[in-house]
Image (cartoon, rainbow, N blue to C red; front, side, top):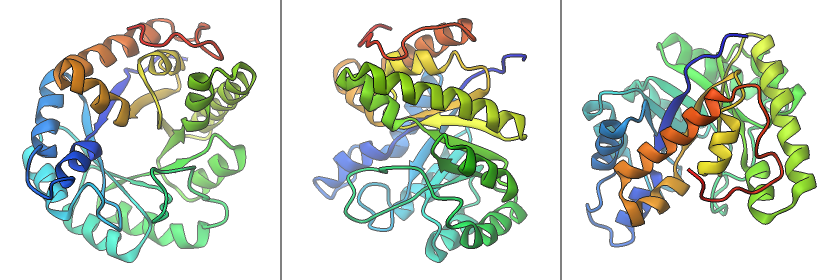
Length: 264
């Protein structure tokens, strides 16, 4: 298949996490978004959680008003979030699972079990001109349900693979990688646009960029952590370089279960 260009969405949630530690206005996630775009980000992702632990309502409004690239609004499928999304009118909404006690999103959305609840959300957002993505595991049943629900995009949850790579569990990493490979192919074959995210660093981003079916990576926590040492502009540029190396190796082999930490 023809390899599509690969986009980078930068998640600015944890700039807001740091700001909220002192309940003030600094550092500003909108300023971070503008810096990331200047450095080469193709879009900005922000997750407005129900408990507002990092991104706030006014952050979403300012991001929509001030950035020049597409805004990807991550949210749970609740009436409150739907109201805010319809008022904000972002380029895209990514529906994610959410639990108050979790540190971060722990798994993919259960599109199969929640299809009756998700269908009207997808319909109302689509009618408003907002692209809808479902954040799901690379599971055939979930992917097929996403297509039935007429969500144009899925984002494959890469957390289990990334964790296994970081922990040095080669067999599990290889198994999770093969699930991602098969899931991306299935999703593309049923007409879905395929994105990926969660837990990606330079090495895993380079690896997953080799899958021609995937057209966008959304990365946040790792990049914000690296930015503390080298700056956000340099982090974005280094991540883009890693992705481009992976894209140039589309269809080839690479990381799988072996760790190549920090190579970029």
